[in-house]
Image 1 (tube, helix red, strand yellow):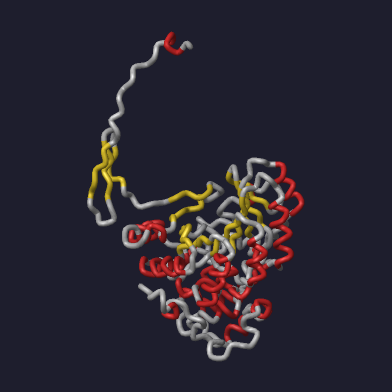
Image 2 (cartoon, rainbow, N blue to C red):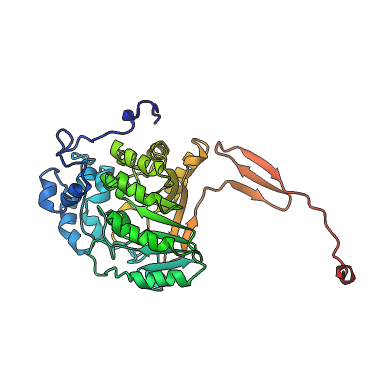
Length: 394
């Protein structure tokens, strides 16, 4: 889908036709009001939606695994007449979350086994994941950390901040820290700044990243004051998480632009989800809208093998098909890298369509996006005779 840059209302709606659309409360733009009025019970949802049996049963059981909590802003995007609505599928529990799949794992990315101190995951040589909180503005039903977030699961996140800071100070090979959780942007400006300021004092840490769904679930949180505070700690990057183009409302776009205007580079990490974004046209609309919000599509994740997510997972071939449908049909700047976070802690592994048809010592045969074949010759390097040992002497 194409949009006129001068008529953004075609692409970015202010309010979806939800139950708050016609007459939003006076406090709507106050993020604290949004948090206090989250939808987190069956009775609240049934006031506004007609639930299918699978959803009703899922909500009744949600407190035993991953809590349900949805901000009014995001709830307002739900199509109340369609149980298969892509926004609805992401945040309303379903009974399928109780299905057993032999491939499911409690900790699919192997984070617990790579945690030298509580709350700090050190899986790659030069970077760490710092889990600073177990709470989010809303809870995605495919959350890879559902074992520890929301307070409903059997496992608790017990981050030892001082031990984590000492570990970072002592390990000079670490140059990159990713703050995640939970969602760091739920912290007050003052509490978040304390963490950033402490990291900023460690000389070998070159930059900090924040992973957050708050700009999408709670765009009201992206205040000028927050952006001015973040601006003090550059280089600082923010990875947002948008899965479907309808999530990019006018309020979300304004928040993302405010971050970008304060020098925060923005990237997006989508998760490939059945019935949400598992087709080329939806993904193309999403990545084009992201660029209009000054967000670079970064990763497209194959859904992790988290327990209770089998109904949302797609075949790996679907992701490859989508990337192949994008490559050559839109700017390369818009195309995310499809990755699988290798189960058990192997890290992110890129997955790409096969464009190399043949390769030998003399040539490589390539297939382009149209299916045409092209030959690229390998360089014909001269064979040099081995040097005699005497020739190596000064």
